[in-house]
Image 1 (cartoon, rainbow, N blue to C red):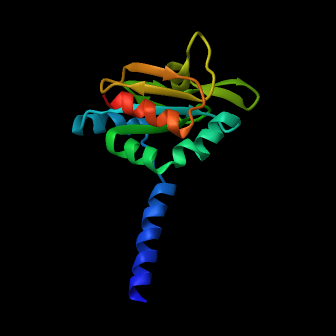
Image 2 (cartoon, rainbow, N blue to C red):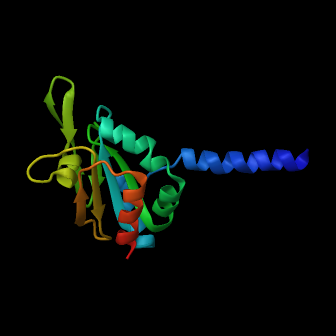
Length: 154
């Protein structure tokens, strides 16, 4: 009975850890880079984007991907319609209303704009100096995202 209880407890901790994957805030990245240099992967999305939600429910629920993100990168999960001011890379970025209850965050525009537009979802990869080294504005399934992570690690 004790073994069963321990097994259930251990399984609960590991599965809870994976389902409650915590991303970093932009404000943490500078401090973390001083501790250990890593690339930062920023997932820029909205609540209304079907492909964004699909990526959240498939790609970012994959245990291998989550382990790689935790061990090799800094990961920021960023809603492009976030309304709070964000201090990042020695600048303050703000929400910009574009109409009645709609708008976009300046930081989403800064990191996610490609060919003068932003198309969701966006993956933006930053080097350890917070410079953009890759942008991708497509849905990536778990297999494609694993390949991307492997290439980024090289």
